[in-house]
Amino acid sequence: MMIAISVYPGGSMYNEYATGFDWQRNFISNLFATRALNGAENASKIWAYAGMFLFPLSYALFFVNMSKKLPDKNAAYIIKYTGIANVLFTFLTITRWHDLMLIISTSLFWTCLFIITIFILKTKLHLFKVLCVVSLLIFYYSVYLWGISDWNLLPITQKINFATSTLLILGLEYFTKKEDFAHIKARRYKELAKNN
Image 1 (tube, helix red, strand yellow):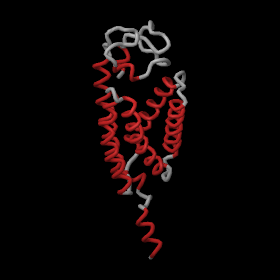
Image 2 (cartoon, one colour; image 1 turned 180 degrees about the horizontal axis):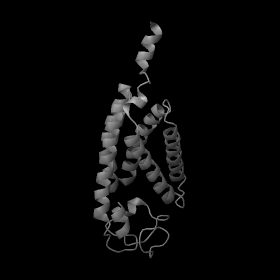
Image 3 (cartoon, helix red, strand yellow; image 1 turned 30 degrees about the vertical axis):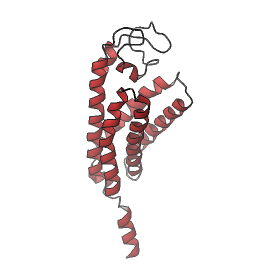
Image 4 (cartoon, one colour; image 1 turned 90 degrees about the vertical axis):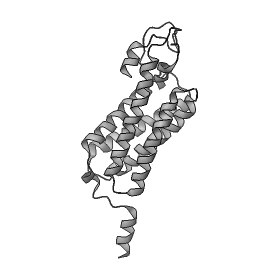
């Protein structure tokens, strides 16, 4: 994606004559068009397509790995298969069905992160508790901005949302282990323990 951003010819919804990618004014989706917003041939398109194929694959790999760390099989199943399904819908955001696929893919992605947040809140991983909550708040704020059509702040919050969720995923992938969640009992085991 960084290559796509670096070769984007230019133009934004505010200034069609601008050169290059403006982090405050351009959306990531601007990278996928055949022509840039300034009318030039869009050299970033092929790189953006490659990035949009690799990002969801890496996210799916994270969700599969994270599902193995959680003690609740139902939650693990949802995270694993919803994360895998998200690959298709995220990649389809580069098509003419962008808006619909964006709604589906973000719903799937953030459902997984919401479930993971619930489990993180039950651990002693205090930094990740804060990061999970902050990431969710930024996401919900971005959805709010989209809902009220605030096109001034949305390009910025899109990048902040992307950066915080990516950092959270990298942190959870490399700095958590199954043992961090081992003390959390699945619901049915809690019910069995109460009955005995």
